[in-house]
Length: 239
Image (cartoon, rainbow, N blue to C red; front, side, top):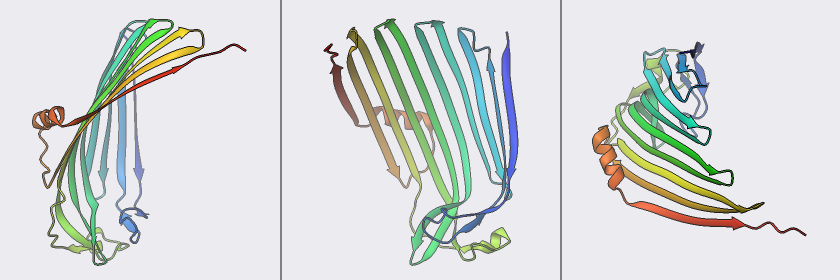
């Protein structure tokens, strides 16, 4: 059994952001430490296991973490399948919320993200292949500690904001499923037939920021979906 691993960390200093307020003045954003790490087993084997992760913490102790275990099956040269899961626990200390009568409102955003990506490739014959891609995606976020930006370039972080009584509820819960199936057949040299099926489903809940993976996946699977079927072929003519 052999494996490989890697890791890195870096500090990015405090800099002004030109995009945080979406057309408003630039705002100093805290510097942060960022660390990445990854490990995987021998990629020459038929089953490969791996894990990637990233951790961020800024100067105001706001933390974010991303973790992604994955597995790859390669039972033969004609077949491979990769399944990657991603969890993201994200916290933003000054997330843009709204602009109200010239006042820019930010808040603390606590967000969780789940994603599962599956890729399947099968070469049936040298001229015939089948591919599948599917990705369910779930995210939910809650806002708190609403503040108005009063002095965006102040040296002290707390001096850049003042408490703000924001009346709306921007919490959200979003689910989406995207999948594609592609069949390819080269029925004669240079001439190819493609059959494609795409399916998509989306469910969005406003003013609801609770993250419950089982409940959210159930709502995603039962959400109204769009199905698209495509047929494409080309014919090569020798002149």
